[in-house]
Image (cartoon, rainbow, N blue to C red; front, top):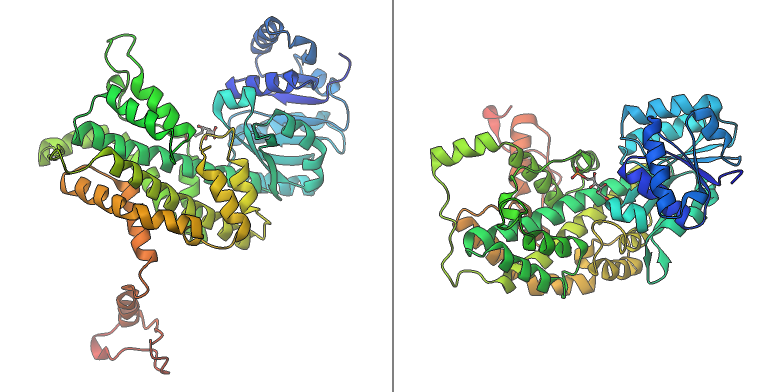
Length: 473
Ligand code: 6PG
């Protein structure tokens, strides 16, 4: 093949699978990796799968760039952070005006904003795209969230849509807005991913420790939930994880896995950004914090030794799996309501035209949080994108019929020492959001007392300070 339509740098798991996906959809692709052995091994494996004729393996950046048809489009699939900047710096001397670099890694959107600003100052053109779906998604159809100049997106959209997942024929690849908008939406996706996973883990904990259910029984529950309103990739894989046997010990695989969760930081970025935006995403924040607590295994052991393990085992009639299912439905709606509200806050703060219904649509297939509920969310947001999803009639109805179950699950769990940080955060959010007269009047009184910050009165009277006298600050 003389000239490839696109290039890809970084043949790690995600990059290699994305390159095979691109080749399979009929686009010629030049590839380059820091270590040439990886490139050779990749090309040999591609030959075995008959995709080699679409692939141009290269050993130098110069040869790589020369193999791509100008104006070039080059995907970077390298670890997020300084390596991306390094790679852009190494590549730039070989590029010509109009060439486009596409960062498809899990970049912090602030970095993407900075790189897009550099591009606007005369560097290579730049797109930051969020790609979700893990290894399988990269190979057979990820969900793609694009950010940068629309004209650059339009140039490569035909390739990105072709390789993306499809929901009933509609590609899950959408332009989100300028600069870091694509990576921002991907970060919120990941925050929701953390929260979905944590909420599932919390009900797993109730079934395992509170109800004494074996992993295989829990797998059956997840499997049945996957046939109902909770149908989703994460419930589906939770069933598979719970059903798997340990190839070494022979027992349930789940029972042999250390209870310390890793993280690369995207959930944390979402929580940090939410604070900057003053967007309440309490369920996601709780999920990030729960991963941090899980990492502190030695402290947790010391805590159990000092305070004793919580009772945990429930009375037989205290909770049932149907209540847990409803609790999870309720928590999930509240979590997504928070996530979409955060996206709306970013759209206002950064002046990005973030298309909320389209975001729900692009998450329906390919990505880690794909679920049937997202289709209903897309429909609800289409009618009224600025409205908190919890007030959309279809979801308000669902909340009315499930919040009792969430309350029961969280309260029974609390009484028995079963932690539910994310579901508990969702419940408190629900209760705060249906309380017209909150307790922030006391906060205002305190602020005025120590700092003379002033307050508004309910009766509208023109008096903005309390009668605190000489004790006040
Ligand atoms: C996806 C995933 C993927 C990955 C992240 C999060 O959408 O395909 O979010 O990007 O799983 O790296 O992983 P951590 O749990 O390590 O933060």
